[in-house]
Image (cartoon, rainbow, N blue to C red; front, side):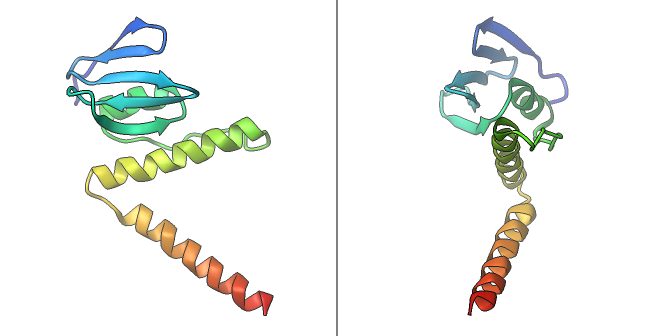
Length: 113
């Protein structure tokens, strides 16, 4: 992955040197494997897709969560981060996230009573 390069073919369509393809569908980006199957996505930005194909991970960046667009992009990027970690064989962030959600649901249900 260290020497992976990305080349623009046309708007919304990029070729990766290892045979994968990055395509824009709607407002999201998807990485497709060499057979045309789904590799990872949706990703919020082209830079996130490029980051994934070159490093194998999606890092979280600061989005302006004061706007609806920023919140949506942040949520997409967080989900892509969880997926990239699980794909690398590290399901810990996703497990921890779901554990926290369950604990919060229990706390709020107890407070509601």
